[in-house]
Image 1 (tube, rainbow, N blue to C red):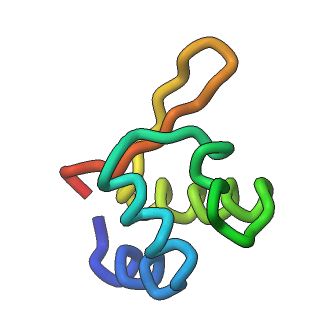
Image 2: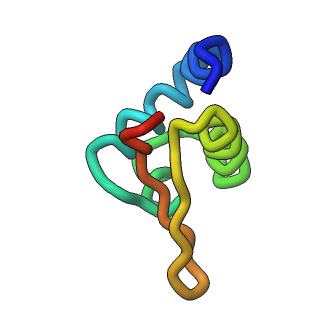
Image 3: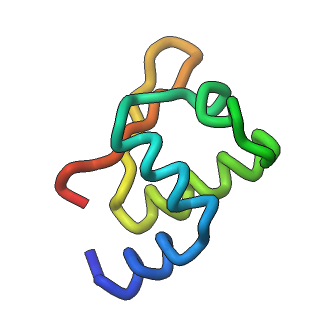
Length: 73
């Protein structure tokens, strides 16, 4: 992954907070929203940026999507 993309993804404080929470444990968007002041669509958009930078991976289980920090990212 290009370093500039990674730094750009982590430049936003909300994305950094999301990434730090996902580094601690795998979570759904609903679980990520707990304790945050951003909407569910905003969290989803932040996750899309982090996934695009290769920092987060998604795992589907039924109707749920679980996210975690990618150790390779």
